[in-house]
Image 1 (cartoon, rainbow, N blue to C red):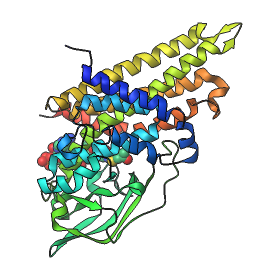
Image 2: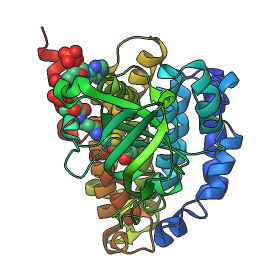
Image 3: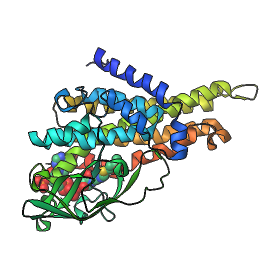
Image 4: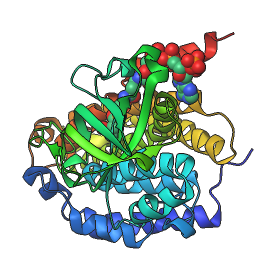
Length: 380
Ligand code: CAA
């Protein structure tokens, strides 16, 4: 068993770390406060191959492995969780299903510009009445001649207001239940496709989310992704991979909370000495670090399974739920270490507390991860 990153993975980590320190740390608070989409930083991530980390060079990607994606995500998230979720959605919810399910022609047209970061993607699964219950969706796609006509509404779609291309899930045959859902590649400038206003969110405020409205939106017949009726499976396998990225994001947010709590505890004086000397503070730091380390191991294990071509659905659900809960624990404890200062915007502790919260909700709530884990264990 090896616990060491390879030379190449270490290089990716160091590149992402340098970028995060140099480019993101100075502006992360501003991105959050202004709710500003960091377009210029996304362009720089694209230059480094980080918008399509695990996509082959031939299709515009960075040609790295999923472990590299995880270590890069942790570093970017440590500095700015808004930037990292924009990167995560493009990588794992858009490029990953495109490399798996696209035809060669679709890869040329759609994957290349997305993996190289010239374009940005989003993943249109959730609907106002269908979040955890994917099959409850109402969006439909009807074939008319050489075109699919899409109607429906998607909501809470991360990246939607800034995206050029979306993957939209829709019923092509409602009578077949989940087997009647198909996936489509939908350019966002298609007539009949529009976005609602940006959501006002608790955290990750520089990443924009909105509804997508589909009103008689015509797309070419060839924009079907994968096979007819394969949409539910495409969504599930995509989320399996995506959840590893969100676990890495949680890890980065939790690590930021830990590192800042340590720095504050060494500086802040109480009862005549730094609070780091108090056992009550030391225990918090020890528990934060231990949970984050366990989360890191689970996350890297899931990425290793994916890289090795092994089934990883259970590992991905385990790392997602554990890392998200570890991040929320760390962010909460980190804020507590800061005392009253932690409740103000003078310190980043309150941002980490707000940013961490979404990791227990998107790409499958913590409850859904437990459903996935239990159903894997109880199957057969
Ligand atoms: N891989 C492959 N196939 C899978 C699968 C997987 N991981 N999970 C399920 N399937 C297959 C099953 O084997 C089954 O196949 P058959 O019909 O051939 O037997 C079929 O799919 C149906 O499975 P279930 O009966 O388990 O389906 P379900 O309706 O009970 O749903 C669920 C299961 C786990 C609850 C699933 O719906 C789920 O994961 N829900 C959460 C959705 C989610 O994560 N949404 C996040 C939105 S995206 C987002 O958040 C992006 C963002 O903003 C950043």
